[in-house]
Image 1 (tube, rainbow, N blue to C red):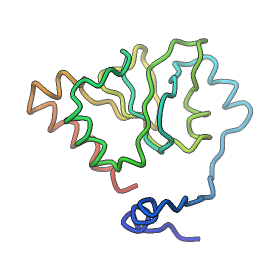
Image 2: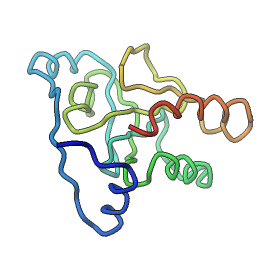
Image 3: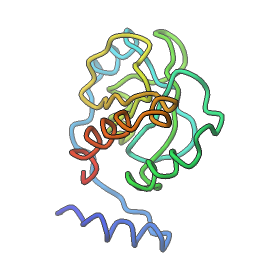
Length: 148
């Protein structure tokens, strides 16, 4: 089955029609076991294929900027998360992929060095508000992934 165009997916979402997609490349048991040894994401609200994360808890800061970022990605595609320490509650990259997550957008650097293929590292929200160069950097990093 071919992938529906983004406009069609959005139209269906506005009508309340859930689109089921066959997931490919599900992680193996070994991949999931290796997640225990890596940085984790504590998933919060939403169910989209993008997880927006930061170190601190989400307090609603910079709501206009966040609304613009979500609108660019697609509001229905966004969910929120918070970085969690190794061994604590949360999920690693293999389990994120198993849950349908395609991208993790980190505002500010992750608390540990990681090499996740699904990670897009953006400047912190405060930096995005204060510096035009940081906003340009964010859009340049998002552009290749937005159409996926």
